[in-house]
Length: 297
Image 1 (cartoon, rainbow, N blue to C red):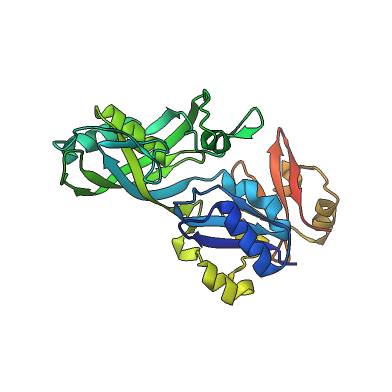
Image 2 (cartoon, one colour):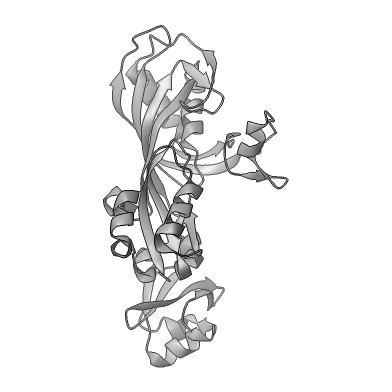
């Protein structure tokens, strides 16, 4: 059974679960999972864990992300993207680039977002997108997200009576909905908007340069697998000797002084390594360090 991480360049038209199902067939194993759902019409970086690495996915899911896409002004849809039905049209033909660039500044930093009805969030045990398919809309609580950068990268003036289009690049916290960001931007500008051609360019330290197409993965499957240590390359690393490695294998708790005697890093979590192999992830708990995941036998 393969243990590690595959960075997939998800194609349009597939759900994240579809990608997991495909990799289960390619690698011939059931233990496969993904970090950070991508919508079916979105493309780009999807992190898929195999075997033991599925236990590490939460450390990847909580990282920052980078996206690009196109905001179409003057038209709103029921899904907030180009796959939905048009719900309203606005005359935004005179909207200028400078006004949009001013408006996007108001979204920087900590903001509140209401998740779209077509998201995978569960309310009362049911995913919102399942309810949306049944024509049911429920009240959703807003949630805090962080927009680190929101840039307008290209501008195309309107060719009809609705509005122009703007290519954008967004760097943000985990849990941010870019389609909601596009829709809210349209509202702030006095009309409406939806998102088209969403592409995720980065999850944590993993970019499109690390990603493989499904065809490539099918052709050279094992060559596309990063080791568990490679999957945790962004975490602070602690190398340990044989004695400490044995104690880690038993899930022992350590004082910071015991485990970090020669380490002067930050708050963790920490990738604990023995002989170039990841054996555990440890986290700070008060004055101690406790195991979050132990991979060593």
